Length: 115
Image (tube, rainbow, N blue to C red; front, side, top):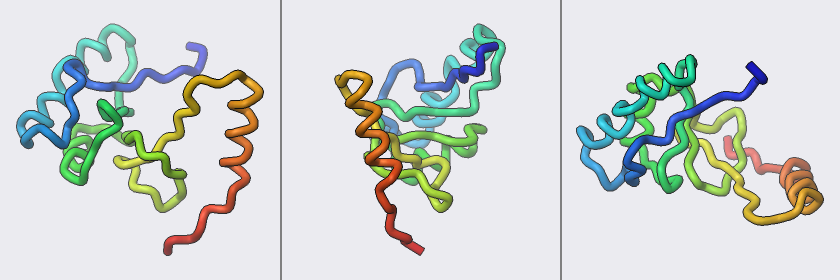
């Protein structure tokens, strides 16, 4: 109700690229319905376990109905980013002022056009 979203992260936390197609499907679906029931929300956002994903895992996440998924790649998100292989910046341990300064540097840094 406060505007927060709950996403999915799998139950067993296995690195998806190490699983076969059936294992990836199970990881992306088992437990999701129970968490949806508990939260009262549709879970359509995914954070890959260990931040690891490849094209196969991204395709299976899309097929499973996720509308976006995040890896652990330290890359900027742009309009051209693959919605199922988004990067994410994790600041690590830092005080509030340092995190704010790091975020401003990243936001103001010019991202080269890769088009």
